[in-house]
Length: 105
Image (cartoon, rainbow, N blue to C red):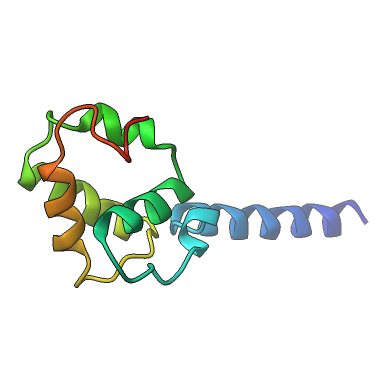
């Protein structure tokens, strides 16, 4: 009986570890970015996993290339933005000045 419990626990642990390492998360479960202006997309998609303060803190510190790497990395982690939307979001974020609304409150 103890051996059976150990096997079930081991398999469950392996599945959990696989899902965790493969990027499975509630953030990755959000699908289909809204169409429209990039600001709405940022406020909808990015806030699924973190608040806007994190984005606000980076405004003026990241250039276009840095934002491109960040947005691409977030899409790789499950942000629901298609590849065609990445340049628009990057342009939007790289064009914002520190403290800009709607990202900064």
